[in-house]
Image 1: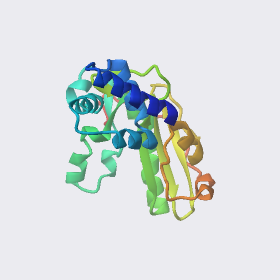
Image 2: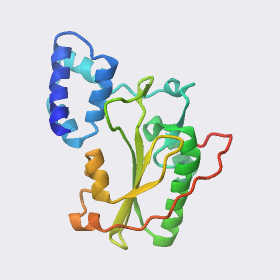
Image 3: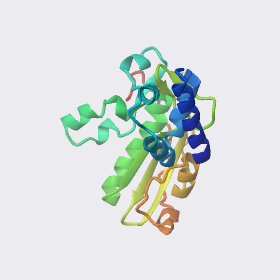
Length: 224
């Protein structure tokens, strides 16, 4: 992924320097590759004030808008759940589109809601937990709503410092997805990101037992 990412950055620069714009698929693919921190650092190191460079990265990092989600068929799925927020200001801030991804509605309201609830119960039982939640974009055939890529998968990593162990739920962004539990190193290998760089390999390899998740009954109202 790192090699492909560096090459994609250089190819995008050639296109922009020639006065052309990347097409939708090229922008989407570059956005996926930039999820890798090494690729992102490479792109940042090559950035500059030239007009063509500014135009290129403006196209790539176009921010999401509410209009992107309108009539898209997807929920606005929270990464950091509204239900975890300690006060009203934090709850309001959780609705920022920076904390939102397009999520299948059945998935969001049922399976994912169950995962979020399980983590809250774990926190009450365990005390301090480190929780990392995010989208994954796997493969080349990615969907897009407006300017927003639709993740193929979602993950929620939980690490218990008391037990010095962790694991992650890794879930397809589909209505009939299952709550697959995988070790931290496997998740990092799949998405190409070192999610907990302060931990040793030994700490990451110790697997925390996560609760079994069962779908909640479907509800009419959307759950974000």
